Amino acid sequence: MGGTSDIRSLTTAAGVVDIYSRDTAFLVAVAGRYVIQIIKERGTNTTVIQMRRALDDLAARHEKFGYVAVIEPDAQLLMPADIRNGFNALVKRYSPRFTGAAIVFEKTGFHATAVRSVVTAINLASRATHPNHVFADLREGLSWLAQLTPAEPSAAGLLQIIQQLRVSMTQRT
Image (cartoon, rainbow, N blue to C red):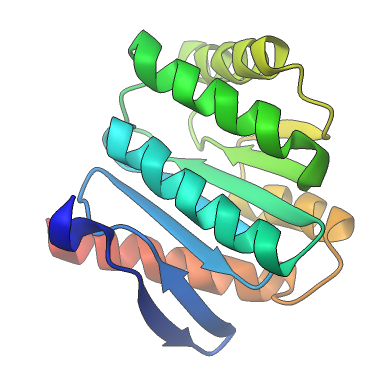
């Protein structure tokens, strides 16, 4: 892992964001009471490790918190079994702590159905108890999650943070 796992802070107009990863394929961050995962290319074992680290940190600070995952349109949707099992274990462990999980995939048709199927499989395998939904629109997903997670940043602030993180990922490639 080395330098790829050092947490760094980014100050935004909507608050401070702790970034747990510097990989160009994915990003894991924490903003207020939210864990943010952006999958640009694919999830990896390092994604699972950094998600665990971010969730551990959030759980030490807050009883409940929101989870938002943004899966970019060109991301690889199929996960190898070890990575899927890693996510299953994280969801099983933290589901009681999640206020909700908004998974955003801004693509329609077969690909959107595939994402919903993967999310359903993970939630069934992990016996998830938290509300979750797959959204085709980032604003809609964040609005829904913010209603379940009444804390800063607001839905508008979270949108601004995610947009800034997405731009930063583009600039790294």
